[in-house]
Amino acid sequence: MAGDLPEVVKKEETGGLKVKITGKTHVKPVKKLDRKECQLVTFDLPYLAFYYNQKLLLYGDNGGEVRFPEMVEKLKDGLETVLEPFHQLAGRLGKDKDGVFRVEYDNDMEGVEVAEAVADDVCIADLVAEEGTATLKELIPYNGILNLEGLQRPLMAVQLTKLKDGVAMGCAFNHAVLDGTATWHFMSSWAEICRGAQDISVAPFLERTKARNTRVKLDITLPPEPAAANGDSKEAAAAAPPLREKVFKFTEAAIDKIKTKVNSTNPPSDGSNPFSTFQSLSVHIWRHVTQARNLKPEDITVFTVFADCRKRVDPPMPESYFGNLIQAIFTGTAAGLLLMNPPEFGAGVIQKAIVSHNTAAIDQRNKEWESAPKIFQFKDAGMNCVAVGSSPRFKVYDVDFGWGKPESVRSGCNNRFDGMMYLYQGKDGGRSIDVEISLEEEAMARLEKDKEFLMEN
Image (cartoon, rainbow, N blue to C red; front, side, top):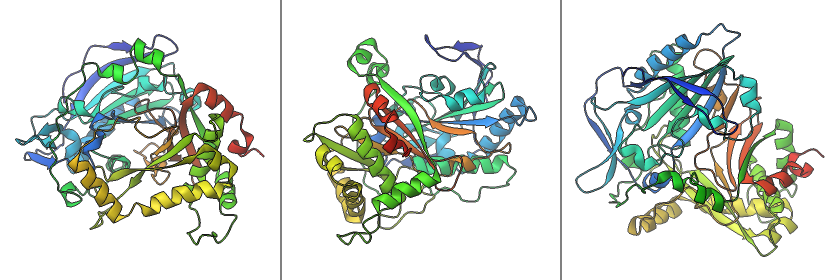
């Protein structure tokens, strides 16, 4: 661990939190490990031009019973232990002699960056009520940092901020190294150690070349001004319509009602399977967002989902596979067809795209990419799109480090664009789902007033 840095105050010019960074250290695996290298594969490489994936978890201090210094030390001690099996997160991006990207780890590397901060005048309730990310980004590290910058900086960073009545844990993960399933496997394992476990219950499966072993050389360098690519420059800000974020909370009863409506033709007339909760909620959002955008009937609208391929590849990979094993699935239709038909029409479009993305389709997609590699940008999701990241399958509210479950789980401001949404399990548990979505301001204003979308009628 390194020494503290001088105190720095981070404050947005307008409406930001007053957050004081009081120190910064680096955490390595508690045991020294031999140098390790792991090739990035076709499932990883397209995300080099995305930004670090950000998560924010808010925890209460149980009425002052849990003190911030003790929380920080417990988290650092647990991190030292859990980084032994998850050592890749303590490494850096590198390239081998042939120019193939890989994750490199050795004991001379700094490890995971951990910043400590204070925002004593901020309450958890204020942050839970916050709908946008402009304020929350002060609590999360690596805003506007491209994954490619993992060549020069840690692959994981944490900011622990003392609040008036709790702690904010902001995490940034290099998305070229791991996907959502791997992220929450790591988080739950870290929490497990902090609760007193001697070892984690499920070790990560680190042999990512078992899923794909084609070596792809990429000639990609950092842009001169990565901040401008994230819309932070005045020119970019002027060109891009302003976005708003909002969290819509769907109760278990609302989810059941949506699913029942979409499956009202039962069995489906075309012989397909009943629509899942995910497909039912997705078409509900897709239709109402399309309506809120006031698209013309002939305008094409695209639905995009980043699908987990662990069970779809041959041979299948374990759930504990550590890396990216996702692919973007794109499907679309005319706005008029989506809105004039009953919801099962759109659900069928989504279901067909998901079902058809089988082993052969995944292999074909990989071969096409390997023959002509394309580095995606985070907003390459399609026209008038609704794109789904994260999954309500992830047990985000079970990440308990020893002082209770989180009060709220959110995504940061990175990788946001018009139509991007994150699905999380609701805090109430069961089948409740939180939908965190970014839209242009006018469309968001119309969506907020849509009683049918909100399930208020």
